[in-house]
Image (cartoon, rainbow over all chains, first blue to last red):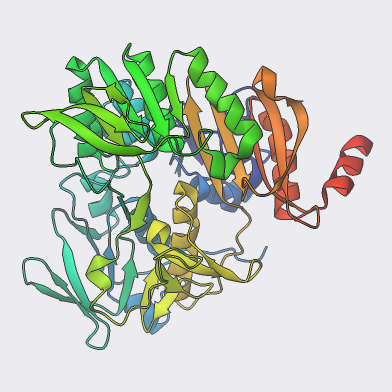
Length: 65
Length: 422
């Protein structure tokens, strides 16, 4: 699983951080999300899919390898 | 984990073969199609959108699109190829004129009839207009991509923009127009920008921010007419008789649910003055009537916590409605919603973020940082001191902690004690 995160469209909702805290984090000053783990293990899949679905800016795309 | 889905979960039952018709190709409609496929729906999905553009996201319209920092493609939600790959049939420039609930069919403006097994109403809202002036050149509203592009074109030559309405949309457009070097006047009958939602303290901060950036604020004033010369707008007359000259005017006085096409049907609507303000009246799963659901800006869902119908015009709510409704259509257990309403507003270098239901009438407490520094978290409380909403800027990690307190409807005193102890 590979995650693509478009920081340019991220609006800083933090939903991804809530859904998958060991994969996503966000900057404190502007809230823009960043990846802690670009290629998370398979057991993170449901959490990462949740983050993808809950992003209000559609900034997250999950690619199956 | 509850609510977890494996792909194909729904494919065994009859529900999976249902033909689903979605009216509205905005974020809510697209999210519903996504959610249906994600939950294993194998039947037909048809989306009807009245605009000519492939589905796009609206929040960037008053920000990056108007500013010209994004081309419209950047706001696109899905390409035609992506929709085709998901086996979703999208009809653009196709306005649905009416629905017959008993016959399970919708009729397009063209006269074509389309049958459905399940119908999702995601027709959104339309911009409210003033009773005058909208026929004039140079008078704009901001709801669609075409609206944003029209204002952008006008601002290429206009020198002075008047913004009528100092809500989020008006304030964002004012900020963008200043960044483009335009003279800007923002007018509102309330004393402060966005006052009904953010209250006096944050409203004052926003007013200062706009003054600092050179916006002329005419607060506490209504508008009585729009002046013109040979059909082109030249200014706005205020209720005290003064005229603000302007060669571009944005009317940003709110939106109303796009439900005119439903008036002839048996789909239940809330009355405009009720909670839920004129939207489609739904139960807490988004069901409006037999085999009809409503989602997004147009939908007033029953909120069991607040015991009233709530219609929320937030981008994120559209996603949550879509996911919940897709599962209900397929007869699956609903996914527990873990979030609260969320909105964001970018003005100049400030990124304002809000969770829950802040309001002018709630209690107000700055719990982190300071408003004057424009780095803060402010908490809004109800009459029993429970946290119902937060607004903040520049302190995102702290906001995530307070967002959980909104979810828990924590009492403020207890939250502060816990915060000290942590």
